[in-house]
Amino acid sequence: MVIKSVSTSKKIGIGIDFGTSNSAAAVFDGERLRLVTLEQQHAIIPSATYINRSLTAVTGQEAIDQYIEDNTGRTVEMIPEVIGETSQFVEGEGGEGAPGEVDTVTDKVYGAPLTDSSMQGRLFRGTKRLLGDEGVRRLMVFDHPFRLVALITPLLLRIRQAIQADVGQFADAHLGHPVNFEGRDQFSNQLALSRLTEAYNYAGIKQSSFYPEPIAAAASFLQAHPQTVGEYLLTLDFGGGTLDFCVLKRQRDQFVVVATHGIGLGGDHLDQRLFRALIFPHLGRGESWRRRGFDREITTRFPFEDYEELLVNWAVSYTLNQNKYTAPVLDCIAQEGPAKRKFERLRDVIQQNLSYVMFSRIREMKAQLSEVTSTRLDIPEIDLELEVSRAEFETLIAEPLQALAQALDTVVAKANLCHADIDIVLRTGGSSLIPAVKDLLTDRFADRVVEHDPFTSVAAGLAIANYRGLQYSE
Image (cartoon, rainbow, N blue to C red; front, side):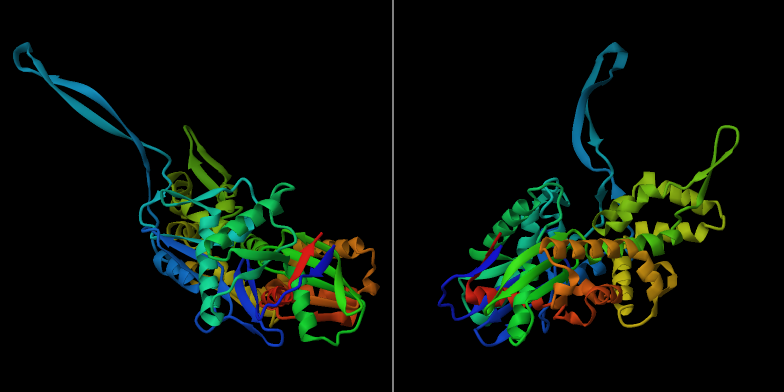
């Protein structure tokens, strides 16, 4: 696996890091590296697209703000969707045995009650995680099927326009990608890159080179620290959707890629685990449901498992507001038992479509625990406030941390090295700020671990690679 330099007379290099949670772009002129302003006064833009009923799209922070404004506190109303009509002739009664008039009676045929009549728009965030999944081809926006490519193109177009406003017309760019996309088969990477290529083309970026994100992060570090000593450098890039690694070896005045590795583990996965562990017990998980039978009262466990996956996947959690889900909840509330308040919270989450807001509160708590040893998870929308310690947080994410440790050991082994052979370890990506991740790296590599621009290192490295004409091939 090598990085080769292609002869170039470029005056400027451009890099675009389209991420699961956030995106960034950078330019490099051979000496000066700078980030492009994408979101008002900020270089980092949320990777979000909001499409309203008129099928108009907004992106970035505006997309999130619009979604929250349109949905928080809104009572979701699921109505049966009309999928067809049937007609039949009906003969009326005539006087004194005479034939009556023939009328046509039309009945509407209803499908499953999945149409939210008051929904103003759909928010799509984390769409990058779906690009390698062959089973996900289109997502419904009201009654219109949208291809994944169409859902990410508006954001890429906005990024391209921001770069163009900054540097003028440009011919090509380096585009980041994880070592391995999430997916179900061996062709996940090929499928995801094909979809990304199409989306970038629609966004006006016709010439591009895909480049692994952890290698780009290493490139930006080496540019910023040209006097770096040591033979081997390892990069850990822990973002919102994936965990990526690379090991580089110095050869004369450059580095070559020795090994790469990546798994489908990111901050989004941690958030879902926290939602399940911290919030589910306060929404009715594990509680009983008393129902009246023919001759006696029946007590069973409340079927919370029917709600779980929809609750932790906020983009589709609005579909919970159907009678088959709401009726058991309302029945449990009517029982006036000790769990009544829990089921009232579950009712409010469903009817007011609060899953996204709750995930936002979890992310805020997670960020705070990187700075303090204890904080509060405060969700006033459902009258829930919990004290959460860093130690409890680390216990809840112990399994993902073990997966991280195994993946780290795997990439070192793939490089035919041991931990002592690594001279520098770069830690980048938003999830790399978690203290337990820092401690894990320190345990293996002691004082050789360096934090490097968690949210912008990849975009910067892509711009450098583009300027120098670097190409990567396995």
